Image 1: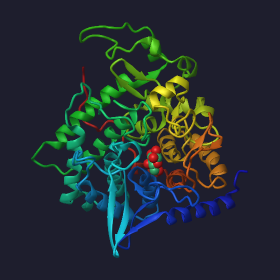
Image 2 (image 1 turned 90 degrees about the vertical axis):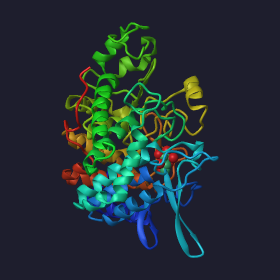
Image 3 (image 1 turned 30 degrees about the horizontal axis):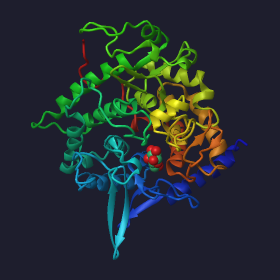
Length: 466
Ligand code: GLC
């Protein structure tokens, strides 16, 4: 049943109630939202505030003039950044931001306990947390006009610590960031190690945000470093990650094992690695940024968040952005289906699932991270649709989500080829599913809010002319 418009505002009010119920208080002040409020399921760490999960909640609060909770969140999570964090005596880099935190009280005294991945399942590092934090700080500044917060010395110091961690040169030949498996929203093994698109795009967007937030200062030449990396990253991603029919034709006829500087097949991609589904699946008018690129490896899977964020960050060109949205329009059944939006396409099955996920029973084919449909992605889909002038796609997706989410109690994710089933182990009353819908609706109602999370083309610093 599609809700009528009267019904709709009632439902929206109900969604607001759920969002408000998810707020976490610390020393009497709101500082974040729990991941889920599921009364029936084992909550594990879903009673904590995850930094990445808080992003859509924060956007909703900012759009409704409730900036205090976002401000408190930014202040408290910044304090956690420099806390002691250890796994078996090993201390990760100083700029790292936690995956999540919770409030603990001992003898009526409250304090925050952070998890930097030392408790999370599989002990994965939350590389994306510090990037979302910078993006949220910029969104806060844009929504409130409060420039003073980011200019405080501790905030400037926090941004620099993040940059130190992200810009450091290690053993990589590329401007992209080398990370282990499961370092972002997909926080389990799924073959997303090395140079996964989502991290590269968040990296790019957070560098652009840092550039806006950093005050010029004499020491360290942070702005210079940021500018140089932005140019190199953009060149690399646009030239090597992009896939459309024309590129596919080129890759198909690539020669292998070329030596030297002037070669076409720089990463030694073997055409035999092109999966058979891709040739049929790629529409003539569509294209996307590949999921990953490394030596001898192009991950041809489509990952939604990375592609949509590339549109928002203007990492994808205008033409590429249109092609990405064309792909959604042409492959609607696969990528939107019964619940927007598919996290990645296609799923890993059979032997590939065994090898790549290590037989992860939560990530079986077309479930959870392995091709599940995630309502939280609706807000970013809507933002990208607005940015590219494809409002009708956002309207349609929101209508689909609204027709199911309330009745299904806002599950974390959906399963099946086209998202028809509530996820096998999905929590209900998942906060970012609720906030994702509210943020999407608010963006549609007032497209000016796009500027909270979007970057214009062409202001990112010098490119690379090689
Ligand atoms: C799962 C998701 C992760 C999310 C967390 C809390 O671990 O994979 O992206 O942050 O749940 O919702």
